[in-house]
Amino acid sequence: MRKLSGQIAALGAVLLTGTTLAACGGIPGDAVVSVNGNAITNSTYHHWLAVAAASSAPATGKSKAVVPDPPTYSKCIAHLKETAPKPAKGQPAPTEATFKSQCEQQYTALKQEVLGFLISANWVLGEADEQGVKVSDAEVKKQFNTIKKQQFPKEADFQKFLANTGQTVSDLLLRVKLNLLSTKIQQKISKKAGKKPTQKEIQAYYEQHKQQFGQPERRNIMVVLTKTQAQAEKAKQEIQSGKSFASVAKKSSIDPVSKASGGALNGIAKGQEAKAFDEAIFKAKLNTLTGPVKTPFGYDVFEVKKTLPPSQQTVAQVKSSIEQQLTAQKQQKSLSEFVKEFRKKWTDRTECRSQYMVQDCKGYKAPKTPTMPTTATPPVQTTSTPSTTTGKTTTSGKK
Image (cartoon, rainbow, N blue to C red; front, side, top):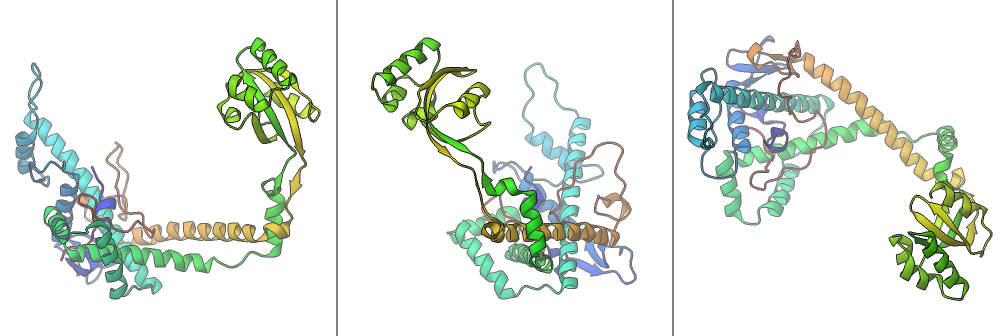
């Protein structure tokens, strides 16, 4: 099933449409959830159930998706009976209880997915308001038009998509608004943590990661690898008789990498090759044909052509890259801390009716037996811009 986080993960719909304000806390009579006084109404909830059901239905076009209808699930059961394939010969047909169980599972998955989305929608919009983060209508419209043009060059295809999914242009505009708000919130948090690292911090990082900024002693070699010792001895004799390494490697070597480069292997550091071969390379004299050396891969005949001395960049040479690394670490730490606090704060402000209790609700207790996980959009994170390709669109809000 394609999840709502990829289908309708927009933030804003529930605040702009289909919601009411709880006067003194609690959950109004027409609502399923209240987030900081903003009520997610039954109609909004069922709208997104329908969208989620449409997104999870097979793209065959043969039958329209049916939203599971608790507690009897009569419509869902009838739909399954109508669309279920005939059982194989000798196999019993599914029972009414089997179909009902399938409907219950579908509803549980859709409910958790939709509520996860709607709750996180309120969380991010609420956080944006408290942070003073805003996006203009012009910004939203410009981004939406760019995405629409990329994914729906033909207007007819776009209209067909809207008709098939039951979504509106307002839904898609709100999805774009969500992405822009999420990005701006992250940017604001990152900017607060963006203080340049001190010279002391840079020096400490350099000392702790000194190997990253240096190169050990290395060797450039010419090599021929063969399956047998006899083949290796023959290759060695041919090289000694005046044939080039390149010609012998091309004819006799079984190593595709060095064979393709005429037998050359450059920049070999100690420990990179098989133990016996590695030891032989770093004991060998320059320009001296050596081998065969037996390894688990065969027999090597080689010659060290050049020794490359170790090198080390100074802290001044790598200061800029270290600054970037440390700044990124600070920003990531700040964002992680923010998200942790954000989830706790908004969970405490989210009241759900018992039959609509999911993990983002205040007082939620994990069931003793495993259930379908929620698939809410991760709070305050930059999600990809809404895909408007048929079957892949992300949207928000019922108008």
